[in-house]
View 1: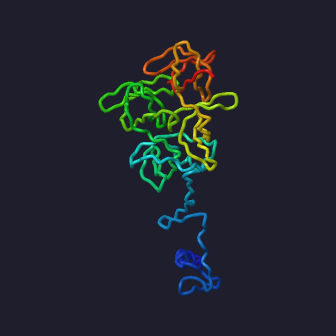
View 2: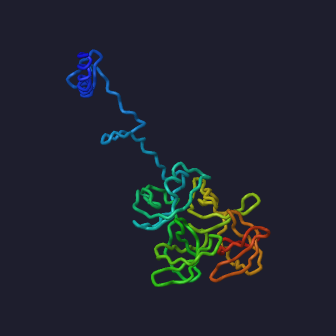
View 3: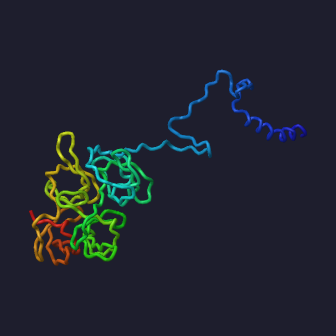
Length: 306
């Protein structure tokens, strides 16, 4: 019984002595440096990164590709630090390929890395991105009826200027399918849409047996010399289309009137509808035959029947 008690009292001391030795030889001896003669120190695993401050083992940093679709060099756009932009977040961009969803969300420029931008989307961490994935709202003259883009619920949406109030631009969004109350927005949160095919604008293209309604993001000359646009479908599906395939909306010289038959954008397709009413400066109420409630849309979601 005395011996057993002595062993119990020695166990903590033996454990401490063992923990204090960095390496233990098979014969119970150590070198002056704390390791066995001829011992080879195991190299740290390349698959993990150890943090010596707290002993937590983390996975290696995930590779980030700023241009996963291989877009050609884009036309430089002047963007100062703090410039408001629309871009896919890093989660969407990482590993993206043609057909992947790339929703354009509100963000800001925080810096530049060569010809690329460093942006922050929402409350995420800054990341590097090719400018071909970014739509920059352009300043311009905010007159009544001007087509603009602005953020609604954190994403790019289209609208019309209805009036100006002191330091605010009053915008009526036109691509929600319903009428929303007028939004009073700061000037730097609104961008004017240029004529023709332009980043941030809507367009249509012919696909099989239907016309598709898409959002234009950027264009560039590819290796075969053809100019192609990066476009996003209604669900964000990314495509590269040749410039000749695209028609900008609203169509020139097309002014829909009450009782006119039109094609309206609905879930990415252009479908038949009838104009019920028109509200200035450019809001149409249209009704699809035998289907659903009326839609409230802008002219850039309508086209004349082909």
